[in-house]
Image 1: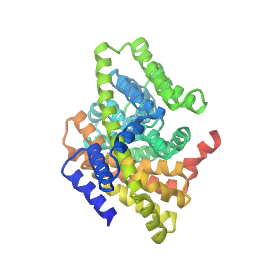
Image 2: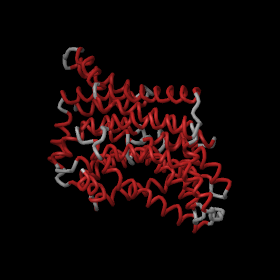
Image 3: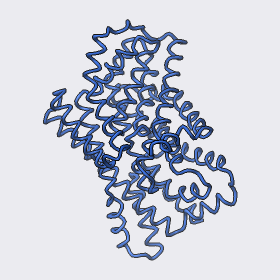
Image 4: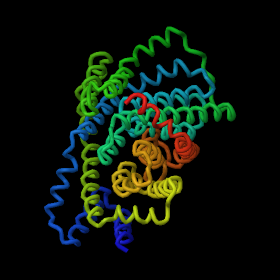
Length: 425
């Protein structure tokens, strides 16, 4: 009965439009008061929620990605990749997808990835005969790679919640990230060949390829330095974020010469706004998590699962269904912060590898980024393309099924997730 009341209260507050952070805070505080506990616990949990060295990486990665977003790095990446694959059937779509993957490895942010590449790819693809909804769907789905391919902000938060190695989580995200690029790319090429809705481009000259690649190389080097530095033990994820920020400053100000004081101020303000929103959600989730722990909700859920579910596949199927439903109403970070404290004890009890589960979970919350009515990537692409939301939604439908198929593939072949961490960590 207690669990039903808590879920009912959460849903009621969400449906009346209260921001997620304040829904979690108000529910947590109400539950603590009802149990007669001192409210000083609220202040203590607010401080402890953000008192973590690893979390310092979040605003730094956000600042880095916003600087790159405003300084034309997406255009350089797209032109470089296009010079190599643009003449393929569906080549511009493949170039868009690969550009999303590369920028994801720089920024760690889905929204930044979608916004950056869309500003270049939407006009280029539509002018070359690609169907508009197909183009918009590809960009919305391609942007989701930003929270899977390292450095991934949700994987950092997952590591903080579960106390798992963030380095291992980053390594685990590489295989599934490449798998999704392969699946998306295969669909793009097949769709383009079947429909014929594209203009074939002439192959770029070697001089054009060399020039475009050289211009994009410093930005790609940022991603390489961040990832290799973390895996080699040269610096922590937090230090990597700081290194990435200063490299972004150097590349955009000294090499590309596209950084201005106005762009830096805009990037800082945007990163600050996102950081405040994210940290408020983290604080709210910490208070709510403390409350549900005191009410023994995780142990109740674990006992319920132990009684009725004894197989890993059935538990994962149930979790998949739950995440798909709540993903219609919550954005990805809220899903992570609300669900993981409840699910983690059962995950461990069933013997599911927490590193594997983190990647599985992130792929499913990626789906939430492209499902209406609150999929953030849908609104980002709608704003960039200045189009109706329905066109974006129609375009992402095939990618939702592809992502769900990829979840089944990594369940059947967990080595896709675990092989690289086992070998390199």
